[in-house]
Image (cartoon, rainbow, N blue to C red; front, side, top):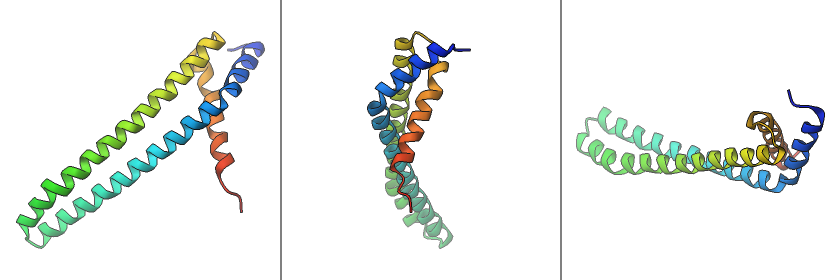
Length: 127
């Protein structure tokens, strides 16, 4: 368990990197939105293939499959790569904080997560 002085040091370092954490949080949210959009496009393409197959329009189904589905699948892969990059950046940031605090990654991660969650809450409009 981390001692009180270690916790204060972690919190201080995390607070000092608040802008970086918030920017990273924004990046992750944008990447998630990109993945969701890509998945939606892929679902629509697959539904169109299914529609053509159900209508016994096999040539059109094949065309949509080789064109739209293939294109949209690559789009999903690219957006997932962006999300993976952002996740690696988050891990790297946690590692940097852990190194600066001279403590374990696992001790720092919850504080970075909490800071990320608070940046999301700051941006949510209240009615």
